[in-house]
Length: 595
Image (cartoon, rainbow, N blue to C red; front, side, top):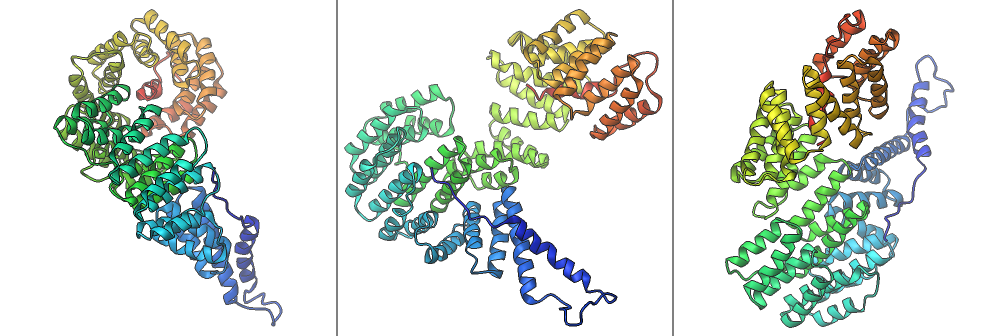
């Protein structure tokens, strides 16, 4: 597999370059001028070194944070002050490529190739640029020099074949694909792209044979299914095409592109080929391999391929979704949001993009924007359970309990005639919203319904059991429920906390301490569990430790309304009569997040 390698500068040396200059400047004060021959001010060369090193360090930090935009800007800034530094040139090139600024990456790649004609990544980028500009001979020359291992060998062969088709040499293009030998996962890519080229070259019989072969290799590969279904709709009949899409739909239900294929086939439409040009074909190859690498942990190379795919075809919806998913996997929701915004409004995948965009907006503390998007999606299709669930989850996470109760009700109305086991979650989440809205009677009905659908669901057992104990009712059944939940999730700190707090509420303080100490081991950073343990320590006479736990709970930043209550306990301890901890209802069930 291709790895993108950098020649590393010594970070320590760069740091010294930054730190040394302020020291020199500080020495030149009016009272301590030193030798009259010493330089009183930094030279232009000194300032240049300082600027270069500062930009370099900022770029390195941005790279570690996977902020390709900032990294590229800082590396280019450093390169401008030190244009002959090949290390900076290489890093600026890779960062620009990762950022999707392919035009800038191409300029830098051209510079790299004047220094190192064998740079494979630069060759690939220049070759893709040539392919986009329909300079097919040059594209093949550059792309064929980018080979390094199994992944790049396949990429180069497919891209070169598409350039060959663009040059009017489809027969040679197919022959080159067929000559490629490699791992067991090569054939599906080879047959798919050979079929796509033959389809555009109007070699319909041969194209069908290739699609069929790829389909037999893996009838659950989305792009193979779509390409084969499209070819079948034009070259056989609607029933055969419909069968291909519906077989996939039984294995992976309701994929938007498959539903679109089913809908259009039923309408009697003859579906266009999956790609319509050499550029779109090359983009498809880069997307397919890039998405595969994303699923296998090759994020850095996947990022390069997906950005190049979008350079060739900016509206490739699947490539956009894969790129956004990659950003999510490295915890960069703000970057994912920008990618989801680029999915075309007329794409069958736009709804999926909007739902995930809303989730990322919530993760980026822009929940109101996410809620607005999801409300529009639900208004457009009131039976869209995925959008309803996403909206309810954001509202619940943001403690909009009245709103989320109404939202989950919409989902329950949709599933009214289909109350299968998986639908327990709607009743559970609505029950949480109702309980937090102080509508316990209705919440209890929902919790019981959730258990009716999924009798041993640990989060429901925990929530309902704790709620009963907190109210001093159904104590025996409640304790049994919580113990069953702990048996299933012995390493869940929140559920173990519930058991400890249940013991506390029934006055069994020794067992409460035992379980709450275990909960702390599992979730040491949780303020509520620390608060609970403080209460339990106080009851068993360990008052100094209790105050330490309360202080620790306060330091862990609990919700604002809990701080005065914790401070009061730190000042005065607990009254003689055990009472519910002020925070007990907040984290004991973690608002259903575990569900």
